[in-house]
Length: 498
Image (cartoon, rainbow, N blue to C red; front, side, top):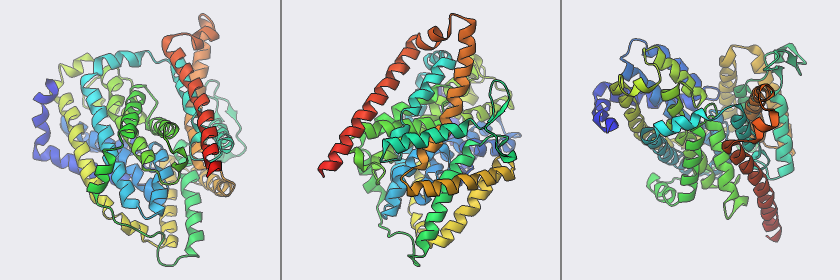
């Protein structure tokens, strides 16, 4: 087996140093709002110019895996997801932190990330050729139906009321239409010069999550002068024993993450949210989700890390990135003269298998360093609320401005944040809004492309409603809607009986 033949290359002192440094930096950068995995990997690429190809890819791979997990740190501790992939983690993770179980929540995060990450890399190693053929079958219609399937979870994510969840999701979809029309290039719904470029996903993420949290902390600062929440210590071995018993959450999250990772352009945010939605729907106690349910963290984090390995399948074989971060990694391959395709695994076998093997070791570094950081989570939780609010505000402004170096982004972030703060008082959550912002462009762009292809061929109806993958996704969408209604009715009935 080729991947075993080159495994020893990973364990040179230089490569181990790169893995340790890349993983540590990735966890820290991932925890900073606005510095997404894509941005983190892009920032490191210039440092790999003068490295050997295998060494450069090892550093980039370590950053990729670590930043996906690192985004959960801020999601759990301060309710601000470090990246869109960690939105679902914040729903239950921060509630656990508020109950003094921050270290326990972080344990679940890193242990589940490790399981999902290893599962995804195994998929990458053993199933690359057939999965590459499957990825080629996903065109505009298939991606459109995937977006619609994702939209069906809006009503049940982060809201006790399905109606309010759908209203918040529709608001997010409306936000995603601001700016240029993707086909005609005409501006629409631009009511100010600050909105001409639309609203970036990360701007919406920071505004909708960070600013309401800042204002909430300022409210709490008047009630508490010592600290924010009481804390209880939990040993990681105790969390490990519990984690390994959550077979359904781990397997469901890992499987969904791997499937989403293979699909070009889907990304970890869809994997995490869909996994969270499915574990909630199939849970015997769905009313516990959003209140500090460990299964919510376990499913979401195993999913967004299981996505990493499979997202490289279409990249390495077909030059089709499976996620935005994988697209940046493509640049890292090309600058070293490595061109995706069959030759990559023959002519450059030593480089590519050393890189893939290093991803396994990077997962080990991630879980070890992550569990070490979990021991010190109490430092952050003991910070007085007004200091915490000031720190989050600085990071939010810095993260927002760094995306496009635009003052307009900072202004839009503020407007969205203040709006969300008052909306949260009425029972609306930020997660459905962000999900709408994420899925809106995916659905619209692929619908418009599919419409043009259908009009030039056998017709729009035949193009969108025929084919095995399309029909499977349509049935999954209808099933998701039906089950959402049933699960919501069942949960409401159970709450009324209590």
